[in-house]
Image (cartoon, rainbow, N blue to C red):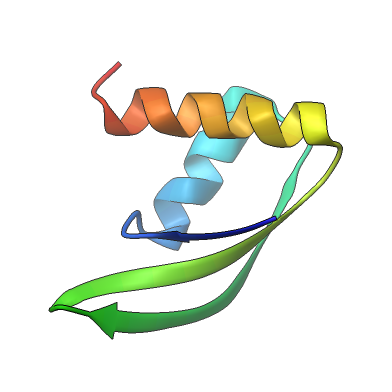
Length: 64
């Protein structure tokens, strides 16, 4: 699964570590869109673990 996010890659790695999700993150590229720096990141792992990571990412970005 590939995601595009404004979350810095280092923060994504920390969220992955804290979530305990069995996924790997690979930074494919960074680019700018409308003045915002985005990262394109490849998530690799079982679908259930990717969903676990994405849930933690949503909570982290919502302030939960």
